[in-house]
Length: 138
Image 1 (cartoon, rainbow, N blue to C red):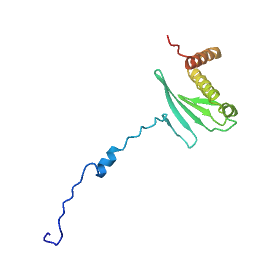
Image 2: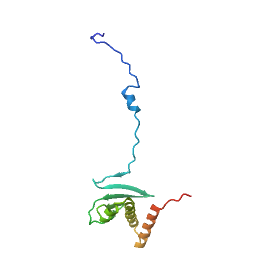
Image 3: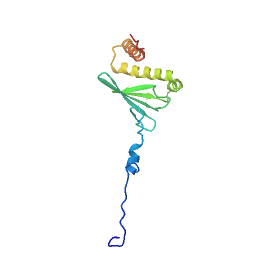
Image 4: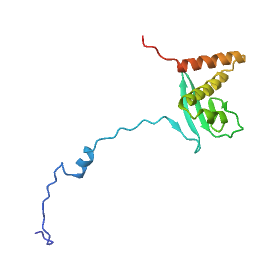
């Protein structure tokens, strides 16, 4: 007994049963990598991409059915998800990817200020070919 009338007891804590040991023994979960996109508005999705030394930001948002399918301001490409063609092509994954690639390459080729429409179409064709070419194993 102590002076105040309480008994002193000694308590032995084993590391195997302590709360801290239990927390450290849990297996760590692997984090799933999320694509680097951020939301501008509740419906918009923005993705920044690098092409060599140049960078482009893509924003997919609702601009209304009567608005253009795609437009750009400086290095930002805006894709209208309300456009009827976008809605139709987004039903299948393959056609959706091809349509997005077409829209992005179209705006990139126009950003380079082509001398004539033929030059813009050739640049777009080359960008699409490079994007979807199969790497052959040699």
